[in-house]
Length: 578
Image 1 (cartoon, rainbow, N blue to C red):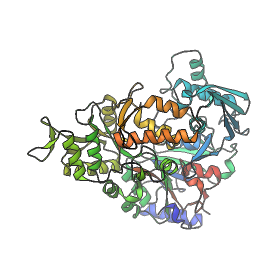
Image 2 (tube, rainbow, N blue to C red):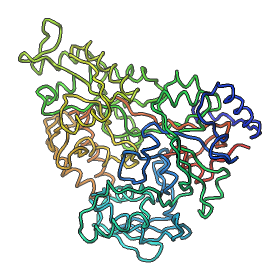
Image 3 (tube, helix red, strand yellow):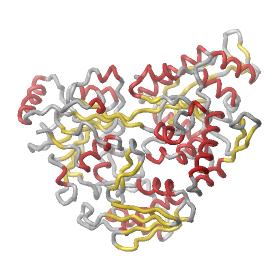
C-alpha cells in the first residue's frame, strides 16, 4: 500500500512484539536474519533495522565523493543545509535557517547550536571550506559563483555576477550537506589552497565526524551501528537507540527480509505490485517521483543511430505503456510527450506538453514511413537494412538492475516486432559502465536524468544532462551528441539551429520569467524532435517503513523528500511505536 492511502498504524505493546518476533526466530520461520529491536550487541535497546543492496558492509566508507561503498546512513550522519521537498518543489530550511538571493549575492544564515561529533562548533568557516573543496571538484556552484566568505560565525555570503538565475544558485547551494568536517578534511583543504595535488576521491575516512543526529558506534561483519548523539539539537526527536545498517545481495533478498519482517524499513527499493502483495500489511510504501528513470542512449557515431529518423522510428516502435505495465504501473511515471524535463518540472513549466510536443505513440506505420525515408528496406528475414547493413538494436543493460532488465527485454521484443534486429544484452554493472565510458556501444540502457539530485527538477540541469552530457568525459558527450543541432521550427515553418552552450548560458543569466520559458521550450523542443536520449519512463523512488514498529503521520509534506527514512525524525515525524 502507498502512504497516500493513510492506513492507521497498529499500536502494539513493545514487549509483546519482542516476544512474538523472538518466537518466530526460534521456530526458524524468519530465518537467521536479525530481527528489528530484538538482537544486537547485547543491549535491550530499540533499533531501526535497515539494509542496502548497493554495497557490502565491509565496503562501507564515509567519503561523500566516492560512490563505491557509499552508505545510506550518511543521510543521517550528515545534516542537510536545507531539504528539497519534491511535492512542493521548494527547499525546507534546516541547518541553513534562512537565505536571501538578490542581484549578486546569496546570504546563508546558519543555526548557531550545531556541533561536529568531536564537540567543535559548526561555523561559517566550515561551510566556506566545504564549498572551496567543491571548487576543486568543479561543482555546479562554481560555474556561477565568484567568491564565498564568512562574514561572521554564522553567516556565509556567496557572490556571483548580477543577473545570474537565482533559482539555479539556490539549487547548487541548498542541496549540500554538512559532510566535510574539518577534523576529516582540513588537510585536504589546505593542500588545495596551497596548489598541491590531492586525491579527493581516494581520501579515506575510517570513522566519520558527524554533523547529524547519529554517529557510528559499532561495526561488525554483518552491520554498522549508529546511535543517537546526545549533544545534537535534534536528539530529543529520537526515542530509540539508533539505526543498524545491513546488506542484502539483491532486490529479491530485501523482498524476502520484508516478507519475514526482518527489516523495519529501507531507504530505496524496487518492488513491483506482485511482490508488494507478499509484504505484511503494516509495511507502508512512500512513493517519491525519482526524476530519473530508464532511458536509452544512442551512439551518434554509429552509422544507424546518428540518423534522426532512425531514433524517431525507435521511439515509435515502443509501446511505453506496456513497458511500464511489465514492471508494474504503480512503480513508474509515463511522460506522455518526452520533453527532457522531470514529471515535477513538466507540470510546472508545460502543464500538458502533448499540446505542443510529439507524444511518440506506438505506431508501426510511422516506423515504416521513417525508416523508408531514411533509405532502409526489409530484407529476406524481414529485418530493416540499409546498404547491406541490418538495423541492430542490441540494448546493453546492467544485469543486477532487475526492473531495467525487464524493460530492456520488453523494448527489444517490441523493436524486433517492428523489424529491428534487437536483443537485450545483460552485463555486470562494472562492465556496462565501462562500455559507456569507452563509447563501445550502439544503444545502451542509461538514466535519462541524473538520479538522486533534486537540481534535476530544474530545467537547466535536466536538459543539460541530455544535451551537454559530461558524465564519462569532461570535454564531450560520451554518446557523441553534437553541441549544435538544426531542427524544424516549433511552428512548422522552416528550420532553426540551436547552439546549446549559448542557450544554457542565456538561461543561467536571466531571471526574466518570459525569457526563461522561451529558452526552456526551445531546448525541450530539441529533445522532443531530435531524440538525444529515448525517455521510456520515470521511476518512483520507493521507501518502506513498517508501521508495526514505527509511528509516522498519515500525511506529511516531508514524505516527498530524499529520504524519508532519515529525514522524518529530523522534523519530528517519526517515532518508535508504543
